[in-house]
Image (tube, rainbow, N blue to C red; front, side, top):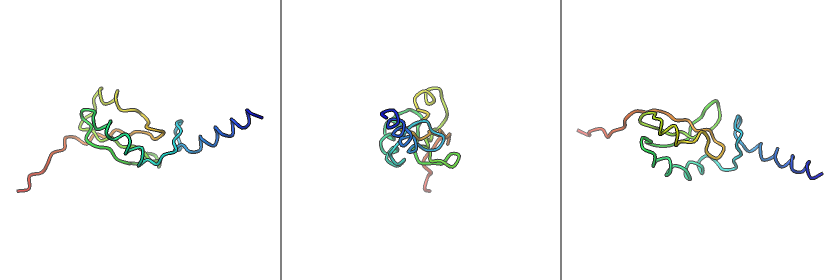
Length: 98
């Protein structure tokens, strides 16, 4: 009987994860972004973060100036169950207002 209860609990927890994910999450993606953006922004070359969509599922976007080995090694593939999508946006600079 204990095994059946444990299996039921695991199946219920698994249903909280975004489709295609083998990680469990119970937080909205906005909370995950709020919690992890400071550490992601500390990585050289990271320009911003945001919420995106990949294959119809919510994803954490990490915007970078260019893709490097350091970025690939420091940015996780998943954050709290959400897939991470690294997007190269190039250099960002302020436009001159004149």
